[in-house]
Length: 272
Ligand code: ARG
Image 1 (tube, rainbow, N blue to C red):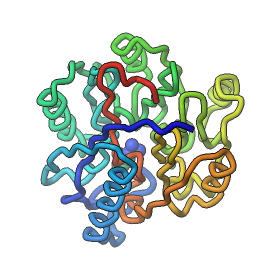
Image 2: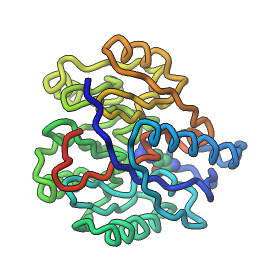
Image 3: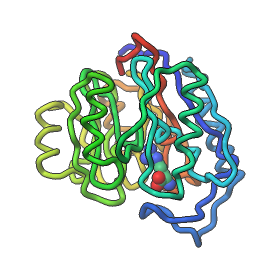
């Protein structure tokens, strides 16, 4: 299995907190260890560097506790960056911050016409873009994604509020393989997934409940929450090398490794 060297955008959780609840994981009355969150995030960044990936960073903004979840900052394919529009007002000001970063970095910019939470809901899987809807990203934005990026967009209907973003219910392992939690999808979307990915890895609810599907793969190494032990075993059986990380504090906001990681694909690097 070949690993591809990747470029990521991350945002240090300097101002991380759980101050509001916009998904079922978030309990603003519960304790969060902010220093531990930073150490766990630094470890994730170190794992990427050790795997030979490049990590770029965007400056965190005070008052935006969820900005650490860089996957929601945009969708970046083939040198084009589509900016985001959040469903919830608490996260609205993250969008211009990420947009400004893409512009400064020289990406061709596109503005969203509808709610679109970036790579949280938009995952490139080989030659198709899988696009989630049901909780956050609006179905209407899927047509715009297809128009901007020129990939066929396949709508994925999410049905369980705990798995509110596509990247909490499905992970792309390589150009041909995904892992997912079937019951997080509508019956029709499950049928589409079976048709497109007959060899997919099916995760258990226990794996998904520790955000095990919120993983980052370079085609050979899979970085995923260390608590997702069943999924790790299944992926090892398939020949992947597993690197477990602990993001227990960020999980209190409903985020894992993939949420913290936005893939930056320059022109010509569109493969998974
Ligand atoms: N608290 C954030 C929210 O609810 C978590 C975002 C997680 N990001 C992701 N790509 N799934 O929006």
